[in-house]
Image 1 (cartoon, chains in turn yellow, green):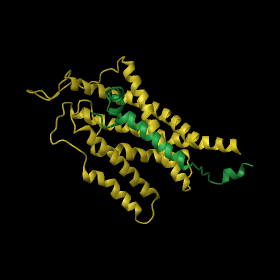
Image 2 (cartoon, rainbow over the protein chains, first blue to last red):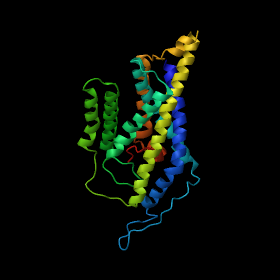
Image 3 (cartoon, rainbow over the protein chains, first blue to last red):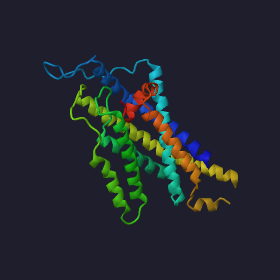
Image 4 (cartoon, rainbow over the protein chains, first blue to last red):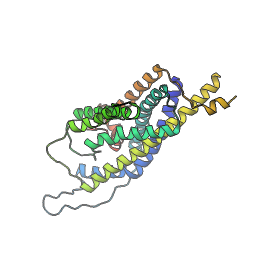
Length: 233
Length: 57
């Protein structure tokens, strides 16, 4: 059983990580590189005097293969990590009689996107490089806490009886009522349009990655479990 | 021979130990790719962290 979870997590993580990386290179990384032009001062949007204008043009991806290779590699690592957590949840549900299938995996993947990407982004939007924000450790704590509360809340809604779904909804709301760590000043140097597009694009790329991840986790797990049963039968 | 497995909903049972293993593996991988602040990890994972909206720096 270790092998089924391990193998399906790695296969699903590789597949989803590769798709997410391709999607990022097409839609997200060019905006990130454009944001770096403002971070370094190569482009200036908010002139001290004069109008707020700047060129709207993403730079090419370039030939920094080591950098882009690392982006692909870390997508593999992240999505494989998420696949392990997703499969842990799916296996717990399977113990309670909910079979693991590609179709149920799709729902798990979408809920994973809600808990791990959308809920934290509600308080801490995806940031262009160069964005000045609150201290990183409190943000990481709020980020992790929000993921835990949202994941637990969704699970209570999906699997809880009587008043537990209501408690789940409250649990999802709590991190946002507490509030993410933010600064009392805006420091943005990049055009608002660029920051907004970066935020929606990175969420969109994550939605693609998570949907594929859930489907593949269900697909590989059900296939491998069947093969394991056939081998032991 | 195969009719039984096709008509009954299949419920695969994963041992609790495997579930605990999956949680630990997941947390370790996410910690490395998303949260570790050592500068070599941060630089290598930089673009992916921004693209995935991990709190980066």
